[in-house]
Amino acid sequence: MLPGETAEAMLDNELIMSLIDEWTPRDTYEIRRAAVYQFHAATADKWRQGKIFIGGDAAHQTPPFLGQGMNAGMRDVINFSWKLPLVIQGVCDPQLLDSYEAERSAHAHDLVEWAVSVGKLMDHMAEVERAQRDGLKPPETPEALRSSGYGQGRTQPPIRDGIVLLEQVSDTGSTGYLFAQPEVTDVDGSLLKLDDILGNGFALVTRSNEKLEISEQTRAILNQLDIGVVSLEGLSTVRGRFDRLFEQFESAIVRPDRLVFGHTDESNSVDDLVAKLAKKLTLTNHITH
Image (cartoon, rainbow, N blue to C red; front, top):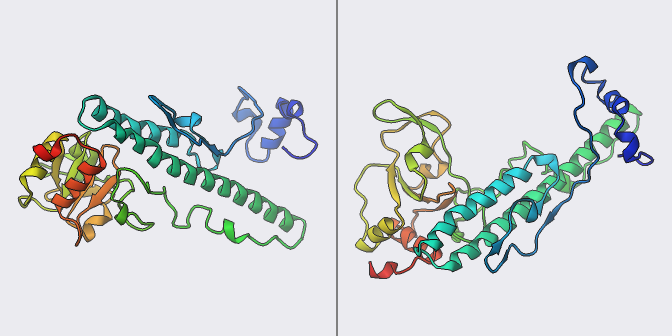
């Protein structure tokens, strides 16, 4: 609201319609509900107390400028929901649940800050338009706002802690980001989303059908975590593309929440990837398999 405006006055239907008149004829809509609200930008200091965890609006509140409030809450639940069963079933140590806050808190904080920046950018753009209408010199765009808007190459930030191969996380790579999900056809010509082929758990995704050269310990870990091996060979993209990591690397481990744990490179074989995943997950008794 502008200085001098009151909540009571702004809830008047006639005033609301007068604000919309420039864009929408009155006979095309009806006002079902009107409310004055104040948005918040906040993240919780602590996401866990013993066996109690928070998520969604209890953990973070974000301005509406990016449409990320509910999305962030859904990511919280999805992140937590694949880890809890592993602990309950005794597959992983309860320490695994500490990664929930480690992964989600910083990610949510990044999105809240970005939404605030976009809100400030919108205010600035409105000031520029007002100056142009009044024949005044428009204000300079603060440097901090130049990278706030869409079209600046920004995307959802990666996770930078927790169950991820940290040495591979960057602003330009794939590790820590959502795995690309194209629509594909298989060798039978069936149209599928790649997620349907990966299944609901972990997946080891490779470029080719060549037999994986892995150790017995790696095979045991794959079995313990029920990690499926999926080859992209024989699949053709119909919409979208395969993850860009496969332009350089042979294999990657994708988490149940479809974030890339890590990929093979000069320093990491498939055996290395699987061993590091088991350690990050605090997998129980994997050495004895």
